[in-house]
Image 1 (cartoon, one colour):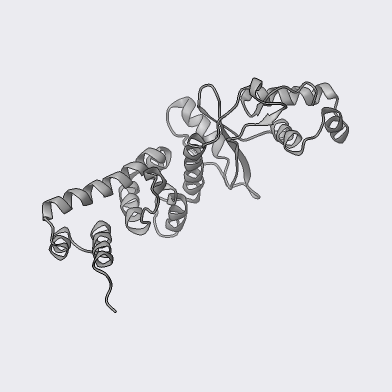
Image 2: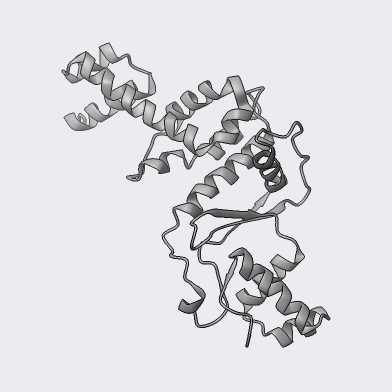
Length: 248
């Protein structure tokens, strides 16, 4: 049984977009004007590659001359399959990982950086609203919180880049066992905060996530209750926690 005409048309269109079939041949097969098909093809390709430029600016700069071909190769290899147009960039970190062995300018660190950059966008777009302290009944984790385990210390690298306005000269070394990285959206400014959390911040997350009282947390860690409250207040100030440590 032959395929329905619309299925054949879609396959032809996909082949044109990937570059497997020329615009001339595709227009002839579809019975449409070549110039109009060319405009549409350029529009779709430009959208996807433009989204990559927007989502992964640091990876773009670090990969340098390899970036244009990486964009085109991604467009050919990973068809967009989501109604939300920005989502077409979500598969880029996995795609980039597969290029490490074959593209000289792509390194494992770039893959970790791409994972971080995608998560920045995902957290920014998170549907959850960040409540104010008055809107929560107890101490609460920021609902946009995302925890990643990355094989490189990406956060210090990005912070140094932002501070000096240029990428650091040296790429950081891989860390055995990975590095915990957290991101969340601040409520009032909607800015994305990111940290390579220290012991106090991880402790604050655990206390709230597990619903541990200040007294129990102090006993478990052999710290004073004032020390526990101080760690929680620091997390509140950062925007990681919402509410008050009083009465926990």
